[in-house]
Image 1 (cartoon, rainbow, N blue to C red):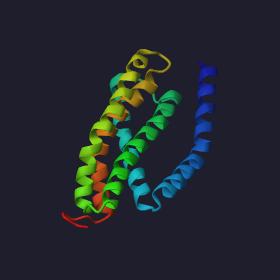
Image 2: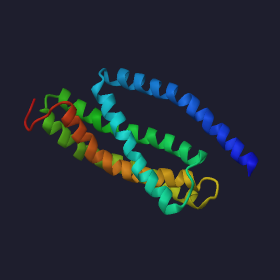
Image 3: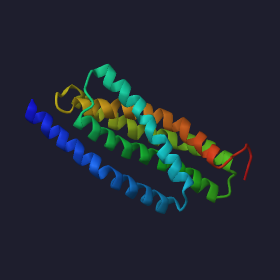
Image 4: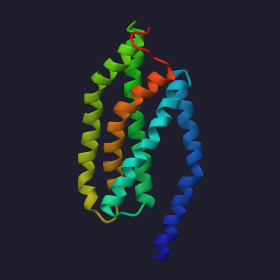
Length: 173
């Protein structure tokens, strides 16, 4: 047990050491992708919502939050970022076509709900067999519960944050 604890501690230290650099690169890429700071901030505001599902998953399954669940959470963050980018990009595309911003937010959410839910559902079902594994069960629980909660919250919170950040009123251009 002592050797396993030591290995896990070293692995977590490596993740913690390089996480700030990875986060900085993520922000730079998002700013370059969108060409502004507001939309990357919207994405970063949605990410902590995954912790609600992760906490519920850890409590319900009884797994400890160790190295594999942390690795699963980092992968989960990538999935959430993809979902939010898909939603924000659709808003931008529709707005670029001359549709008023309020309608863009509503329509983009309706149009992109199915692809976001399908991608999340396939990932969730793909993780179910790992849920019963001793080594990877915590990671699977993290991804299953975190992605479930985060996907549902993303579909409501992202449009709301977009409207707040851009001060959108109904029928506004």
